[in-house]
Image (cartoon, rainbow, N blue to C red; front, side, top):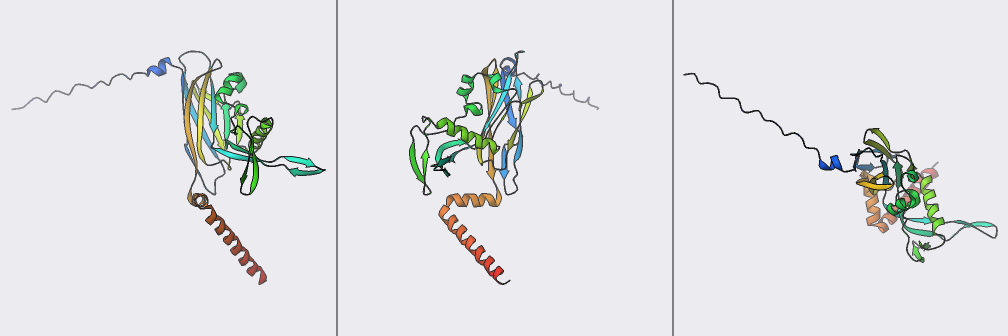
Length: 269
């Protein structure tokens, strides 16, 4: 007896994809990095990282995007040339407790055209509004046998020293401002390049992607970038920081050994 084949299973209809309510109704920005970790070794000559993202804008109101990348804070030691009795000498060193080792801003147009001075200062966006840590009161400390003056943020000369920090970091390509660094490649899609020089400090970097509309912040996306030493350089770096005295003694012994070997070789000629 021949049996009829079983009926085919009912066709499965996938539910229609639902659009995110936030995407439809809210103004927001989303961003990402092409590489969230940079490895530093003896061959490191700098790195170029692309930051890309999208602006979800349910209206036709124009918006601006500002990218801020800030590296780990580190102390800054400065001296000033002063003339005494016709001789140029270094002044007593001035020590800032912390300044970003790397700082860059990129935007769709100049920051002054995007938001007002007060708004940028409140957000700390732009090198002119960069927060450089300094103590409330001046004091003198001794580090490695050198007496440094820790400058007060309330002192009259704070702004002069602060400008010197920024000028030196800009000359070293560690601070950068690009008013045309953010470009829209398509409707709502943008990109910016983060250029890290060879002397960029290692550590954790923080990136903020601000979305502005009518001079007010309308959204922000936060990203993290890690710059880390790898290989033999990392081992030496960690050993030097874990055991500084042992590292110093070994460096002296190594230098003495190389000097002795060189004198023996040259003495035979």
